[in-house]
Length: 482
Image (cartoon, rainbow, N blue to C red):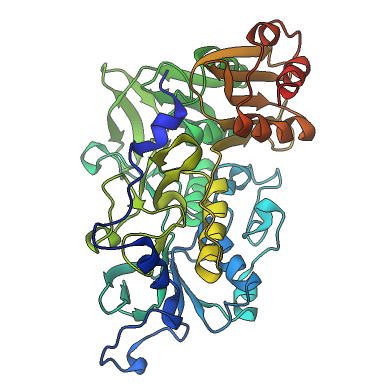
């Protein structure tokens, strides 16, 4: 099995500085207008933003948590602007494939309920919060061009924005099926923002047969939601089992059996040839490479995502590693420009490699770390512990709620304890060290133990762990090694 760390590892290098630039010079030029000004004969009235010292491009999780950190440091009011293609203030994006898709009679999540930073127990930052804190917001107007020399941005609507320090937090865009094979047909959905989720809900209200393309996080979460709508649901994916980047075959089988018990059908090892439309132009069939077809009036594509580096790819930034390359303080090679969240390719310190991680926890932490480094004397290198989680079947009336968490690195051999009724744990051990651990349906105390184990990487008694009679005993054995 390909390990998860390698799946996010994009370049085995930690060299981030250009030969002509020292780290000290980079830092001194990364603090905005206070220490980094260039003189251009441009009237200030030419710019559409009044707040010009700090500009964040992007309106997702990372932008919301970065804004909170600016406020906490007293550096937002009259100084910070956020430019977003979203119609809404930053929100906790994971909700879109979880609670937002609950059936309408089962208390679905809706804004303003999940604006950042409620996902981490913080304040709900509604649009009024940004106004009250003097943060200038530009909605539904993504950046289309950057001029690094003049330190300006141009938006789709033609607005010219000035920045002193720029934080790129543009996240990812969903990978799409080509238009020529039906990837844009009515009834075919991709999920990245509220508008996407609303369009899917509109389809689910009328749907009979749903096909989910992809066996990863999006596929598993959307399929679970579709079952809540009592819809005929099929997951199609080319791999041998669900979530192949992380789950072992044995662990995947437990989840697949649970999904099947709840009515989900699986077509593994299958690839899409094309999507076919009916006389009304709407998708009606999914045709596979083997020539077989599946009837569908709603199709959800969950086949991964790509870092949204445009328009910054041609602006002197290094996107060759699959994102915008940064150092441990999220500085790019261009003075005064930073990148955080999904779009950043950063040094994964504990594993000594460059990685790009698409996860809400990293979006939050990277944004906070970047802003603290920008505004203060903090020089601590970002030391991220990879973590992933999913929560599904949480709507009212569900026979069981599913909630698992993973921390660390899925390398080495595995030991599986438990029978999924209700708990199961998988431990990854490499050269005697506990490198990663996944737990399903743990208690709060058990979940809190996982990052401690993964970060410490203790030597564990493999034989004792294998002979544990329960998940609780296995975690006690592992915990005693700390």
